[in-house]
Length: 143
Image 1 (cartoon, rainbow, N blue to C red):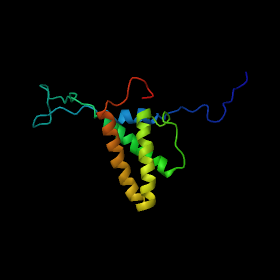
Image 2 (image 1 turned 120 degrees about the vertical axis):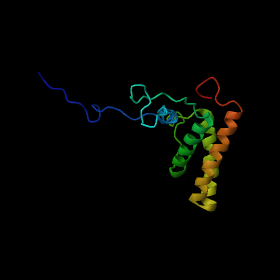
Image 3 (image 1 turned 30 degrees about the vertical axis):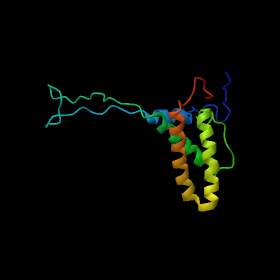
Image 4 (image 1 turned 180 degrees about the vertical axis):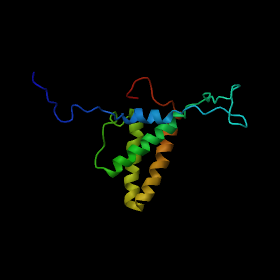
């Protein structure tokens, strides 16, 4: 019986998540432990228990701001724009990114990298807040 050899890289498990999925996972919270008594126990039998805390999701403009700012820095430091879907962005978020990067490039030439970095944070936030104020993404994935 012959043994079958795998080509290099084909036997590996892919563990990387798309940027959007990773950002969504990071935006969710975990439950916090319930309050305990003076002895550290909160159950009648002295056992420690935890109750899930009410977790409200972060406003969508916060996640938008984080991903747009991240990819704006990546694009500014690189030489090319990527595909918005490979970045985990919607079309609307990608439009915000393009405007932010254009402004950041001009700011970097004019005032340096630190000024461009501050501009990215500010303009990504402004763009995402305005986008979600006007309704955010539409029905389709391209919105």
